[in-house]
Amino acid sequence: MVSRGTTQQSSAPFNRRIVLDVIRRRGEASRKDLIDTVGLSPQTIANITQDLEDLNLIVSKRQKGEKARGQPPMAFTLNPDGGDAIGLSLELNGLSAARVNLVGEMRDRRHINVDLRDPTTALVAMIKQVEALRDNGNSAQRIWGVGVAMPGPFDAPDLSFKGPTVFEKWRGLEIFNALEEAVGLPVFYNVDSVAGAVGESLFGSARDANRFFYLYMGVGLGGALMVDRAAYSGANGNATEVGHIPVVPNGRSCSCGNRGCLETYLSLHALSEELGGGGTLLTQEQIIYRLESGDVRIHDWCRAAAPYLRQVICTIENMLDPQTIVLGGTVPPALWQALVEYARPWLHSVRSGGQDREASRVVVSNQGGDSALLGAAVLPIYEKLAPRVDALTLGRDEGDAERLKTVRRFAF
Image (tube, rainbow, N blue to C red; front, side, top):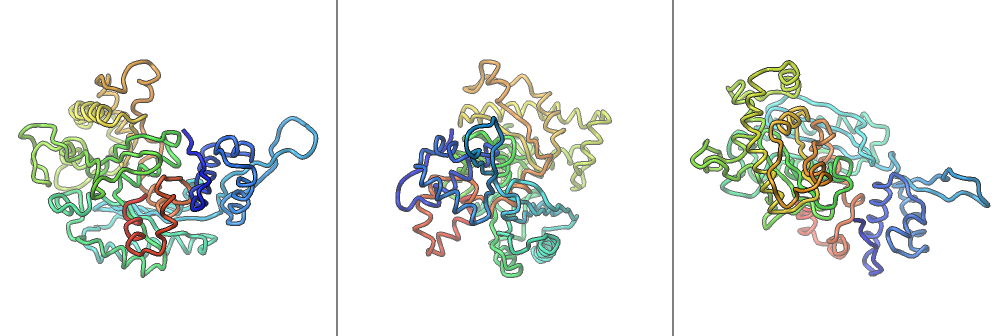
């Protein structure tokens, strides 16, 4: 499904986003393609494409094809050099950072092992990474901002900043104001599951899906429901915290105060506790090595965790009826693949039935554990790359500082 343009006077930014989204999804598109797809007049499309070229967001080239009279039509593609953004993906024991261009390519990527539970240590580490990525690029002036992905939830008194999967000393998140002031760039942040879903929506396994669910496995387990290219946030921005759904009566204690929560059985923390203990998280390399070497313990864990994956997939499908469920996060795809193999066959749900549906019900991310990092980098440029219904009203609120503050937190 492709959004249609609108002739409302305040809709110019929305129409630009639609045109950009069509070009991104098709790879390239002519003016005729855009007119037929978006439903705007030839003159409006001509004006929009000219504006986008002037902004260096797209580039034009002659289409190749059969010889005909006159010049071949022009085709437009996203300009990889039209702008970059810096993404930071935070976990308790490490910081990943990347500089990403408009087509989702990582121009530079780096990772440091550092204890981020202390806000001062974390702030210094983030500033250093942003400055290094900015200085290492060819066009520092074209960096649109910094996106940060970190474990959630936020602003939930009984859940936020408690337990082994979150940053206990980060209350209030004033650290992002300090980061913005230090680096001189706008800073956007969101929970890692939402950032990962954004990355999958624009450049990953869900780029052709308008309604999908993203199941994120990192230290904990989270999720995000994407509807028409925007994440459903709920009343306070903490929707789809699937990791805290109780699945085992009187089960394992969870940091949220309940027992038997899903992420105590299905998460990197749960896996690391089972295989090593002591609070040390397994790295991607260690997980891949154990899986490829046939380590009995990790396969036993996958076999034991698979029924919980099967259960949550069925629950998500029956509650939300998404086009597909994407499995991603900071764990390697090989771990998800092993879990999927042990979890199949899936339970019956509103999404089951028929070969085509079965094949598309659940897919593993192709981002290699980097979807949250990619999504974090996309946060500053998402407004220009993906149309959203509420974009029709954003232009009227640009002078409202409180509104912009809210957008930075929730709208991406």
